[in-house]
Length: 432
Image (cartoon, rainbow, N blue to C red; front, side):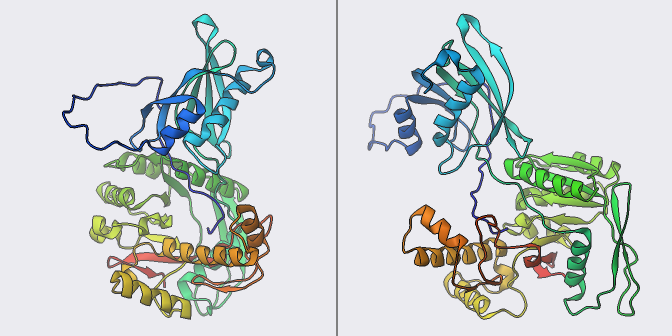
């Protein structure tokens, strides 16, 4: 969805250990290096970064001197409150202009000399972030000694605004077009995790059954966690329960065990949240175990070399998008596609490897530009207020936006702004 939000960058959380080595002496020291911004921030906060993850984010931060709390009476402050305050104070080392994830206390480990380690689990909508535990070492007076782990940004989980009937109507629109016949749809009973829908007979077409028993296959990151929270909530509101939730890590070479567990659980559709490299491994593993099951994916598999990595195995994988450069384009679409051809050598719509990212970013940037013009300012609060009261209409790629945001509504797109697409012949084409 097009949201006024930020992107969470996931990272691993490790224990209070770090290995150090001395670099060999150099005869020529070369030009002086510029201290990274995060290191300058650490110095300003009175801490040192003793270890980093493979992305360069701090994973072990040590106070140069015991870092006190802001409380006028630290002796009355609980260890949990002191740990939370220190995490909030040092959060800019990991995230900027965002709020940290919610924290749940997982216990306190006493140490000799009165020191303690407070274990805080980061969560998204009450769901634990995998490898998301922070360990905060405190002196006896509550002052900070060190923090182990990677602080992650808090964000809203995926929101879903639909009903089983509306979802089926949307699917039939995608299959048969909006001009199709519209027979009556009646919601049936819940059976073994299914929500059955009864579609009245019509001379134009007949739907014999419409149901699904989903299995979730998600990447093991904050992004996957948020999708799990959103989908689980949405399923629960409709008395549907996923037969299983399986996860994988970046660069995992084989997803066969996860797929076999979903198969044994009775899943008849796999709901996938993955980017292109891991998505490719999923369809390869599906072929390896000989499981003929449909995959409905997040649009992440469209943003890379999915078809190149999978060959003919990509055929038939369905996913959602907000925009397709195939077919007849509106004037804005024609202009954007021409610009992509002229500037980047794109030969046709099949070469736009991240159509959702392109369309969402294009429309979002123009909406922000209109808000800046209306606010006569680039001040963040004024631009936000202008977005929530945007006066001008904007004929974008995805749709014409008319007052797309309010103080309570920060989603410019709804379920009606999505289209179903499928990999066919190595290209992304609309579902017909």
